[in-house]
Length: 449
Image 1: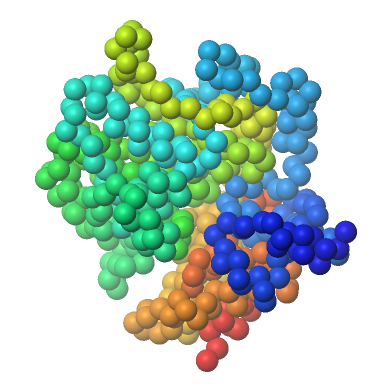
Image 2 (image 1 turned 90 degrees about the vertical axis):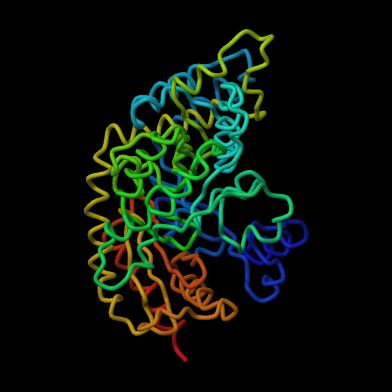
């Protein structure tokens, strides 16, 4: 099979995600035959370094034998069973281990298939909790400007990136949106910590005014990933946790993209020393192998649903593949790697190398910011460095970087004018050097003229 053959067959029937399909009249698809480590290979032997972990899911490389072997063993034992009224060993062990490693108090696991579904579970569960507790006026949610939480209608409503949301506005519930603590917006001379503290004032005001009608606040801890990799200081989470306790509001932490070591700690909430009422996980949960998500919550919330059947307080939410044994086995192998290897320690060294190599880009005349949180690093291209005026989105300058990356064997998928790295943790120093070199070349090409 050749690349061209597969592309022709693909375009007859496939509708690709997050894609204007007409682009593929001039922008060729990239067929992939196999993967190994940080590398993907097409049908003609070209290799591409996966600098974005295939949409942020892959932690330990493609075709990792430790994860693959665990899934293969499970495949010969049990592929799937209904989780309503039944159970199995992988889902029980995974639940025990997640409760042990996540922030304290998150003792109950509700499984779904993907990140958006985990958010839907948290939103519904929070609302339903207050209904079960007799506080029926609580039916609203608070989010941050520039946030993103998924594409299903509840998750889409919970976000605030207009590119994804505006078209579907008439279908969505209305949120109470407060300004983001995004440190890109801080004034000169103001630290990220001080800026994040100052930006908490609108959140506190919203909670003071509307606490009686608010179910929960939902945030992406530390990094607003699909919101152009904007970052903020952990102090905001600490202040938010205290305020949610004060005003009787749940805190939903969406760690779907930032969990499992991406920000430098196993979970981003650890950097603020807080535990949310709901923790949503997916993506890296299975090391990038299979679709699986989980919403963890507390004894207090679980107890609000625990009653006689006739009270109709049960949480009647389900997915056909809830707690799939194959996905759970991939997740268990992923947790084994964290337990057996010094992943977080190794990542600190790799993150430092990424910072060192990208530091010169801060002086580029068309780079407005180079920012980093652990193994996530972003470079923001701007038209005017002094004012940080952005390039018009219609010019699609990030696409120039993407195409240059493919020519040089590196998969970079910019978010608008933001070039970012979120590589698998098995990346070597030499591969980091290649990744940064190609991105820098792409930025130079994209910002000419």
